[in-house]
Structures are given as structure tokens and as C-alpha cells.
Amino acid sequence: MHIDMCASDATSLHERQRHSVLLNNAYVFLLQHWAASSCPTAGDSPSSDERSAIRTAADSQPVPRIPPVISNTLLVQCCRRPTETDMPRGIGPAAITAVLLSLAAGACGSARAIEADVAEQPSRNAVIADANFLASDVIHEITVEFEPVDYAELIAAYEIDQSKDWITATITIDGITYYGAGMRLKGNSSLFGIAGAGVRPGPSGNSDAEEPESLPWLIRLDKYIDGQSHNGISDIVVRSNNSATALNEAVALDLLELAGLASQDSAYASFSVNGSSSVLRLVMEHPDEVWMTDELGSAGSLYKAESTGDYSYRGDDPSAYDEVFDLEAGVDEDLVNLTDFLDFINNADDETFYGELDTRLDTDAFAVYLAMQDLISNPDDIDGRGNNSYLYYDTTTARFTVVPWDHNLAFGVLNGANGAPSPPEAGRRDTSLNRAEPGGGLIGGPDSGLEVANILVERFLANAQYAEMYVDATAELKASLFESGTAADVLAEWVALLQAEATDLVSSAIIQSEANSIAGFFE
Image (cartoon, rainbow, N blue to C red; front, top):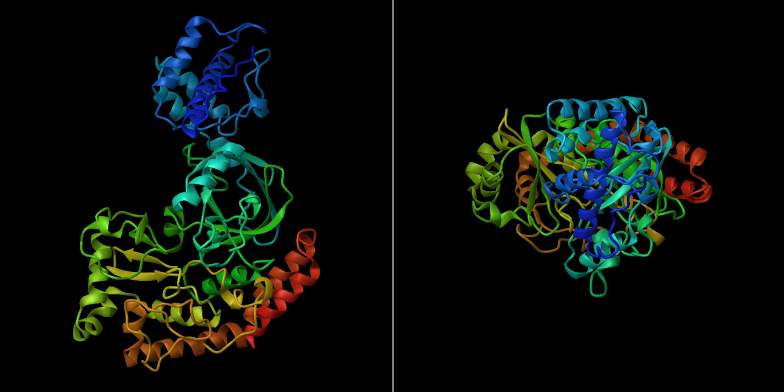
């Protein structure tokens, strides 16, 4: 028996997902027959009762709760019992057992039961427990498959209003396939090449919609199938970079961690889309609930600063911050803690600001943050054009911490020919207290045009005590990371990996050339 419920006239993404939900529920329904040893004979069609049950389950299911988890090549064949390879990833023996238990409880026709059963997959995750996806000592392999028409709609939506719509995809990581994953574009200036004329070029400004393997992506393995993860990781960021190797960001992330700051694990991958040629990409953790708990603790909230916003106070109405901050993890639905902090840093008089800052902000960590952004020569940080940062609020201490994010411009990448790292220049932080007025406007420096004033940076460095903390942190970190040879060792480890395993993707000469440019910053 062969079932194909993907209607040819389903032209919209919504309709295609609707039919895929129907197909998925049909598959689960027939798995119930298999497990119960009641599979119809080869060549039979489902009975009218079976068809009715399938459609009832699909019709009662929210759309698009379960996206396409089976391709046409994996449509149900009922002439034999299924093996593990016949089943979509995420529907393993444990899931089938759960289905039988549901049947025994009289929940045969329940879409809710089916939804819960498909999400159950502990045995599958146990199989890959030793995969160590984010290890830095191997080049991973990630292949992506999605429907071209879905991708075309995604690109069209972005070209119209820069929206980043989700599409469904099949993701294979080091030979392990995940059906029903979600992915969307990730980034802002890195997508300027797609947005069209009239947009200022930026990192990966030459991005081309004809080459999806070159674009920045956010992959979410559990977007449509609850609990689906690779080694406990559900969100994977495929980074953009104007250099050929992305060594600048890989090294920067490691150095931030060595400095004691919250950072993201990263790894290299051979990345391809819909059978394209493979390209070398840096992939990394996405700051989400799991990441926050591991790096900062579970008792808190994590807010992402958007490129369309700044650190200004816009009142206590949370809707005023829709394009300014996103709550990525934790609880603060009305943004009370965030807006209170923004009100304080913008509107407190100097006596109150400097008298209370230590109780509201981890000032030691902030001094280290500013120092490290200078040492790795990253112009696109908290007071960069992209406003790249996260804010973490610790409910146990009632203090905020500025969290580093987005370092694809570290070590002078933007200024180099063809995006390669350029030689180091003098530190850009101005402690002479003659910086731009807080609240807006470009400020000068080696990367003039990329930096904008940030109220927190301005007021922090305007105080002699805090400015001294920043200067001291810079000197201490330069000695412990650069002069000690630690940074050179970090770079050497990444270079050794690329030279050993990635020269089929990037030439040995380019790897060494970009490494040499980065090493110049350590001198």
C-alpha cells in the first residue's frame, strides 16, 4: 500500500505544511497497525474507517504543528514490517511503545496523543550521546534539504520587509538525520546582499540568494518536533563571515571564554544545501534557555539587543521595545527588570548613577567586556552599528551583565582585502572623556562609521574609577592572553585542524595567510 497525500494544488507554504501534517499522522497511524501486527496486506488501500481516522486526527491538529517529517521517498509501504531505518527520525521503538499504551488507554484517534508520542525519543538521543557535535577537533558535516519553493518564499519575504520566516528542512549532522527541523535566515548586515539596492554593504554583503549554502542560518531541530536535539543541542547558528576561514571569530570566542566572559562554543563544518558543493562554515551555539543555564545560571532572564534598537529608555510599555530587545530566555514578560535598568542608565543623575551602578551592573565583568572587545579589535559590539550584545539579569543578585555576541568582524576582518583580517591598529576606546554625546551619532576611531554612542559605555567611561578599571583590565588581559602566548596557542590549534581536514574547502595558503594576519594582533 502506498499513500501520497501531498496535494499537487497546495501552492502556499501553509497548505503544503497542512498536507504534510496529514501525511505524518497517516504514517503514525499505520505504525500503530505495524506494532499491533495488523498491517493490511500488500496492495490493500486503507479502509474507509482508517481514512476517516487519519483525516480526523489531521483535522484536529494545529497547523503547522508537525511539519513534513517524511519525504516522498519514505512514504508508507505496508508490505513488510518497518525497521529502524524505515521510521522517520524521532519515531523510534520508545515512541511506538507509547503509541500502543495510548491505544490501550482508548486514545487511538487523539491527535494530542499522537503529538505527544512523536515527541518521545529518548532512546534516539542516547544513541548519539558520544557524537560531541561542538567539539573543536574535527570538521563536522552538515547537509540541509528543503523544498525550493519554500526557500523562494522565504527569500521573497525577506526582500519585501526583511522578515525572517521559518521553513521546514531535513538536517543531517555527521550522518544523523533530523526530519521536521526548522531554519530561518539569521543576521542583519550579513544579509544586505539579499535585501537589494540602496542598502549599505556589510559583512557578507555579497551574500547571494542563489547560494543558500553561503547564507547565515539559524537551525532549530525542535522547531516542529518537541524534544528533538543533537547531543542536547537544538539551536545551531551557521555564522556569516567575510573571511574564507572565519578563524577570527573562532579565536575570539575562545579568548572571551578564557577572559572569564560568557561565550559560545563553536566548531567548523562542511556545509551544503540541496546537494550543493560543500563550503567551510563556522557553526556555534545559540544563546537560548539551555545556553543561559549552562553559562550564566537558570535564575535569570536573557535579552537580545536588536540591531534596530539601542539602549535608550522608551517608557515602561513593553510594546515600545518590540524592535529593540527580545526576551530569549527566562521570565520577564512585561520587561519590568529591563525597562527599570534602561530608565536608570539613561535618566539617573550622576550621583545616583555612580552611587548605585555596582548594585545594578556587574561592573567588573563590564570592564573586562570592554577591554576584550578592544583587544580582539571588534568594532561591532555594544556601541557598534549592529548593537550586538545580550543583557542577562540575575534574579539572585538583581544585577545585569552585558554578554558578548557576534564577532565576525573581530581582528579587523572588514578592513582587509576580500574580507581577510587586516593588520592591528591602536585601541579604539577613548578614555579622554571627549567621546560623542550619548544617544546617537557616529564616533571616530580606527573603524569610524561602524561605531555609535552607547549610553552605558559613555557614562561608565566618563567616571575616573570605572575608566581605570577598564584600562587595568586591558593591560592584565593583554599580558595573560597575548604576551603569554595563550592566544597564539588557541590560534595554532584551529589552524592545525583546518590544515589537516579542511584544505579541500579552503586552500592551505589562504588558511595560513589569514592566521598570520590574526597573529599580528598578539604582538
